[in-house]
Amino acid sequence: MMAKVNKSKDVSFEKALEKLEKIVEELENGDLPLEGSLKKYEEGVNLARLCREKLDKAKKTIETLAKNSEGMFQKEPFEDEEEE
Amino acid sequence: MRDDKVYTVTGLTKDIRFLLEDTFPDVWVEGEVSNHTVSSAGHAYFSLKDKASVLNCVLFRGSGSRVAFRMEDGMKVLCRGRVSVYDKRGQYQLYVSGVEPRGRGSLQIAFEQLKKKLLEEGLFDQKHKKELPMLPTTVGVVTSPTGAAVRDILNVARRRFANVEILIRPVRVQGGEAKKDIAEAIKELNEFNRQAAGSGGRDRPIDVIIVGRGGGSLEDLWPFNEEEVARAIFASKIPVISAVGHEVDYTISDFTADFRAPTPSAAAELVIPLKEDLVARITGLGDRMYLAVKGRTDLYEKEVSRLGSSYVLRAPMNVLLRLEQQVDELARSSASSARHAVELAEKDLGVSTGKLSALSPLAVLERGYSITFKDGKAVKKAGGLKKGDLLVTRFAEGQASSRVEDREKGAVDG
Image (tube, rainbow over all chains, first blue to last red; front, side, top):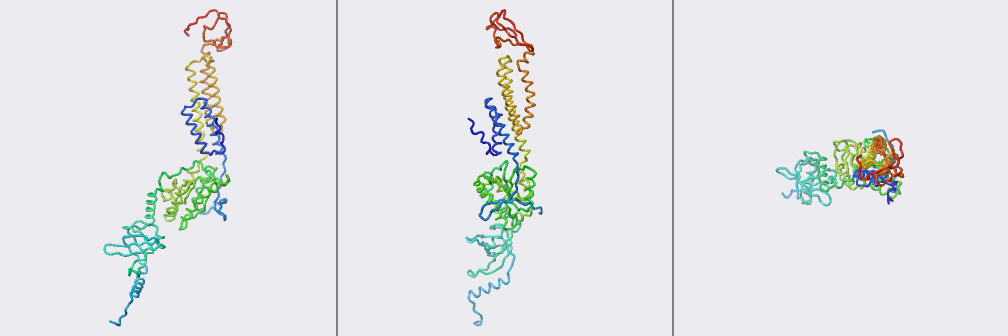
C-alpha cells in the first residue's frame, strides 16, 4: 500500500526535507490514528536519515565551463590565480 | 556687375558649406532638445533651441550608439559636433558627434530611463521571480576569472558547505564588450542545462547562477546596467542572483534578477548553506516528530490512568508500551539523522518510565491493593464465584492462595 515510499535514491535533498516537514506537521496536527502516525514517524525517520546521508556525501569541485570546437560544453579545472 | 562671378546654386551651397565647415569644425552647443525623432535607419533628428533661436541637429546612428541615454524633448543637453550644410535643403545643421546631458550625468539618466522602461514592461515583477534552490548542487558563476568576486565566492564555498560544484563561466565584466559576454554566458549556462539533461546524469544541471563582479566606479559596473544583460537575466530558466559591487550599488541586473545579493560573498552565502544549519534543521524536525508521537502516546497513558488501573488494563498498557518502545527505537535508529532527538528520547524515556510505573498495576499494589485471579484471570465480579473456588491473590510482594467461603454480588465500598 505504500509502494511509492522507497524510491528514495533519486529524491533530492530538498524534496526529502519538504516531505519530512509535511510529516512533522501531520504528526503535530494529531489527526492520524496512532498506528498511522507511527508509520508516518517511521517514514519521517527514514527521510531524516536520507537527508543526513545526502549532506555527508560531500565533494566540492570548481571548474570553468567553455564550449569546445564542436559546440559542446567542456569543464576544465579552475586555476585559482592569486593575483588581483 | 557682369564681371561678378555667377554662382550655380550648387556652387554657392558648396562654398557656404566649406566656409561653415572651416569655421565650426568642432563646437559645443548647449540647448534644449525639441522635435526629437529617430528614423527607421536609426539616425536621430532634433533641434536645439534657446529663447531666441533654433539649431537643426542630426545624430547619425554610429555616433548615436555611443550615447548611453535616450534623448527626449525638453531635455537640456550639451552637443558636440561640426556645422555643415545639407545641400538638398539648403539648410545648415549641426552634425552631432557626442551628447552630454546637463545637470545629471548621462549614465544616471540612462540608468533611470532603462529602469523605467523595464519596470513598465514588467521585467522586475515579483511574479516572475523564481525561487532559489535551498541546497544547490551546481552553482554557475558568471564573472571575471581573475576578479575579486570569484575569489570571494570560492572563499565562501570553502568555508561553508562542501557538497557543491561551482562552474565558472569566465567573462569580461567591464568595458564595451562586457555586456555581450555576460548576456551570452547566461544564455550558455541555460544551454548547458539542456546538454546536461541529455547527458544521462553525467552532468548535473546548474541549479542557480550568480552574476556579478566586485566593486568599482559607476562606469566599471555599467555592463550590469545594460539592457542586453537585463534581458538575458530575465530570459534565464535558471534562477539568477545578481551580485554587483558593494552593498550601496544598485544595478538594472539587480532589479531583473530573481534575487539581489549586496555583494558576491553574500550571494555565495545565500546559495551555499552551512552544513551545520541544515543538520540542525533536520535534527529539529526529528525532535518535533518525536515529541508529536510521544505526545500522542502520553495522551493514551493519561486516558488509561483516568480509566483506572486494574489488571485488565495491562493489555492496552502493553500495547502502549510496545508502541512507545517502537517510537524510541526509531528515534535511536535515526542516530545519524536526529542525534539530538535520541538524547531527548533517552531523557524522556527516563521520565516516562517513572510515569508508566506509577500507572502500572504493580504500583497500585504498592499502595495496598491486590488483584485476585481465578484460573489465571482477574476476578472483577464476586457474582461469578462459587463457594470453594480456588483464588490466587497477588500482592505487591508475593501471592497467596485461598478458597471462597461466601460472596456478595453488589458493590462494596472500597
